[in-house]
Amino acid sequence: MDAIPADLILTGGKVLTMDDRFSVAEAVAVRDGCILAVGDAAAVARHRGPATREFALAGRTMMPGLIDGHAHMDRAGLRQVLPSLAGCRSIADVKARIAEIARGKQPGEWIVTMPLGDPPFYRDPEKGLAERRWPTRHDLDAATPQNPVYIKPIWGYWRHTLPLVSVANTRALALAGIDRHTAPPAPSIEIETDASGAPTGIFREQTFMPLVELSLLRAAPGFTVAERVASLPAAAAAYHAFGTTSVYEGHGVAAELLQAYRQVHEAGRLTMRSNLVFCPDWRGVEDADPDRLVEGWAHWLAGRGLGDDMLRVGGLITEIGRNPENAIRATAPTTGWAGFNYDMGLPRERAMALLVACARQEIRVTGIWPNMLDLFAEVDRVAPIRGLRWVLGHIAVLTRDQVGLIRDLGLVVTTHTNRYIAKEGHLMQARHGLPDEEAIVPLRWLQDAGVPVSLATDNVPISLWQPVMQAVTRMSTAERRPIAPGQALSREEALRAVTNHGAFLTMDEDRKGSIEPGKLADFAVLTADPLSVPDGALGDIEAEMTIVGGRVVHRRGHAVTAAA
Image 1 (tube, rainbow, N blue to C red):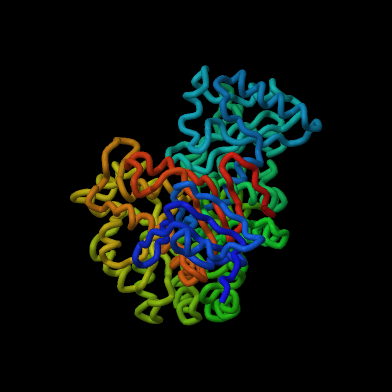
Image 2 (cartoon, rainbow, N blue to C red):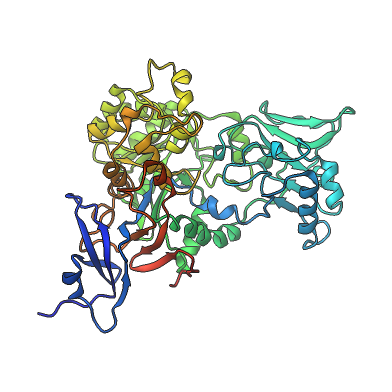
């Protein structure tokens, strides 16, 4: 019998299949968006037909597409929506950039820009200015007196240092109703004033999630659904450039972000396999019966959720407790950088009732704060959760006993090594009063316990190769030394964490995560072999080509459209 002809053949490379045996193949055939055959070049060549497209790997390494366990992918696109101030090295540069933007605006039209500093981290932006200070409202007035101007603060978790700073000009302050009598809405906010008591236009926040733009400067326009729709394909493209083909949005999505994803998918422009967790907005339903509420959600949140291989919504996130600042943020008309609802938290007793109801309806739950582990265990004693793949995210410090509990509860873990190893790993021992550093992101303990660990970027930066490098080297970028080197993963284990375990996280291990016949044709053709590059070069790997469902979505140095 003749071999089934392939739509696409990739041949002549080192194909890391990531199957159970960690097999290495030479070629892959694809048909109808799925893998038709894997093996040596001669065997796969049998599937060459008259219409088969062929790509010569030329010795490059190819592996399954990477799966980001906590991505916040949309933010990579939103950073392109607002005018950038990157590269400004003086107040004069800032004024010139604002004046340039104003030339394309009508008098009275708002100008809202990206923060001062250079992406992705925006480190110490005022130190990069010649004057070693922030611009004031008077500086911005000189650039455009006819337009209200607001320089947004960063999303604080990009940099993990405080304060967050934003600046408004005189016209913006007037529209926002801010004068010498205005009181900060929260203790974390400072409204800087001059010697006469008048606001200078500079706001400082001792909080990682911006509050000023969602309260005092609420008059400034936020991100619209249309802007989110327009920017999502660019966000996906940015992640594809590093070989990512699937994301899990474990922090949950608010209605505005879910609507954007849906519109992009319906238009055929969604190239990233996107698994979204529901983020509830509790306003107006605080007193609703949790059993009735969850019963109504079960038809679309239970199990793998509702949707298809490209877009699926399933499970929910919550947290324990509510704070006054989140209550203020939640009243804003948009969620800003977050994309999730700020008021997802519940008093512990009510959170317990909600999670028990979720367990009974087989709805998975995600928690990203340490106190959720004890709550998960308490829920399990009432309604077993093992087998539901509840998620514990952003792990920072875990004891051996906690690792055992995670294993016994059948949890899936997602990490934040960009923060808790690279940026702050050297601080964690003192911060948590640890006898040594072994409990800091203990990947080896988790691996040896059989806990599925999915690596994640949290959007800072967007390449999963940084977390892969951190898992292998445990390197602190602050002190240039390894943090708990005994907790390192092997390269094979780290690669499984961005493929096999990511697929398990999204409940798609039967569909993706390895290169095997019948699975989805999601591939990353890499600039270097992750098994042989020096340790320090792991984080520099990019994708020469990224393929989702047999369709090229990224090709290095080439423009690729969603229909390519």
